[in-house]
Image 1 (spheres, helix red, strand yellow):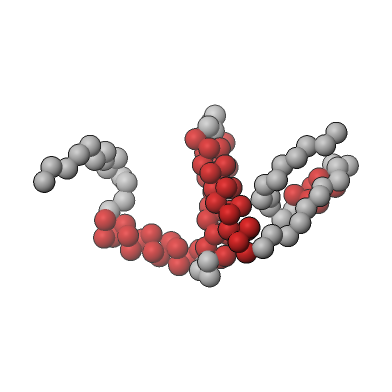
Image 2: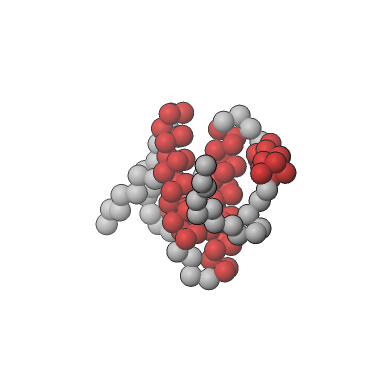
Length: 108
């Protein structure tokens, strides 16, 4: 039985498929394709975080999202540490989300 995925997967997934007696068909992506599939994977991972049924599942999905952010950063020429430093600068300037504020409107 054939199942079509057409999605970005982690590097060891083809080996895992083979170990399960399956035959994976994979190809390398161009830079342009890779970026587009990273963006698609980001949407997929966000949905998995949103629909996680337990805190343990949410933790695992957030870990997947972090790995995706690492890949996006590296593709863009940054290390994950640089992204974290930038996030810290933005938090210092604009704050974080600890207060759980919802901006409903602003009147000029």
